[in-house]
Amino acid sequence: MDNLMERCEDYARICRENTSIPLELYDTYQVKKGLRDKNGEGVRAGLTNISRIDSFEVVDGQKVPCDGKLYYRGIDIEDLVRGFTSENRFGFEETAYLLLFGKLPDREQLRQFTGTLAACRTLPRNFTRDVIMKAPTRDIMITLSKSILMLSAYDRRTDDISIENVMRQSLMLISVFPMISVYGYHAFNHYVRNRSMYIHRPSHELSTAENFLRMLRPDKKYTDLEARVLDLALVLHMEHGGGNNSTFTTHVVSSSGTDTYSAIAAALGSLKGPKHGGANVRVVQMMKDLKSHVHDLKDEDEVAAYLQKLLDREAFDKKGLIYGMGHAVYTKSDPRCQIFKGYVGKLAEEKGRKRDYDLYNLVERLAPQVIGKNRRIYKGVSANVDFYSGLIYSMLDIPEELFTPMFAIARIVGWSAHRLEELINVDKIIRPAYISISEPADYLPMDARE
Image (cartoon, rainbow, N blue to C red; front, side, top):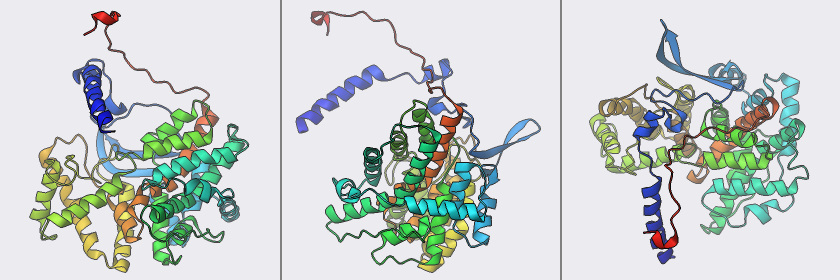
């Protein structure tokens, strides 16, 4: 293996030498790296009616940054959250209905839909033993992907992409994502960490958030506030426009006509990346590093100095990033983060974590100032939803291995809605154009090659 790695280091050097593209050519050919320009404007790749993000407003013909807005099927996320929380309802099921079907359910429709999800909350016989518990890994996203692909073997209509069948598959996946994630974690905890294993069955009478906590915890117990904060987290992560990487992946793969399991596995692979779904883990790890290197956590100058070291690649992972700060679309604020903050404070009080909450507030206030002094900002910098979600999950005693799967448990609803939207509206494979910059080259006989 050591010899192979040494050989691959040499292969990597050759690959870099012959694959690197001069940066200036992107400007020459007017190609947007990452399909976004320096002002954060993305290339228009399609139409969607599922959600909308507002981060600018037009004033006197000019685009001006504004507080961010997120709409699910035209409904402001703030109004949606206020609606189900004020009436003391869990919001995951109601919001899933809205995203999938395009309208809010009435009382009877919500009851039936909740019952449908509960009925789908089951795995094939011996699936937990034969699939989830085999080759357990710390990376639960890998366990999720493996399990989703294996579920196709139990489906007699895997390749049927009729809307009715895709809807059936989608509802099933929405229902079993929490089970697979939690069981995958318990398998890892037992077989790799040599700790006790708990496999609790979900209850048909409980919400998605309640069932997650019930299955995760050895004693199945949780407080009402814990369940409602987790439910809110799932709603806020459920959908975020068609342009985020994993949702775009869902559209691209679905456009090829492939099956639901393959499309969702591809989306999981996208979300797994630290630039997308893994950011909340990095926030928590960064804050742990901050605590170990800053003596007085209330000293603004000392905290700011640590943040400066992050930007200077002298602290934490030396990537030059303050995790949880900034967003590809939002400018002045991320509405999901703003909604989160009030509930984070309530949970911090219940959990005795107010000092952590105060530290996060301090970093949220100082980080944009530090970033603004060091870098040219084309749009505003503010805390994004990942900044507080990691803190919430840690206060809920959710292990870090499940942070990104928590994102997937919520986002499977948005992916399913977008897959259905792609299949209903567009019968054409997505095939973007790439400009080739290769020069003509002659084939050289073996003896003439250097």
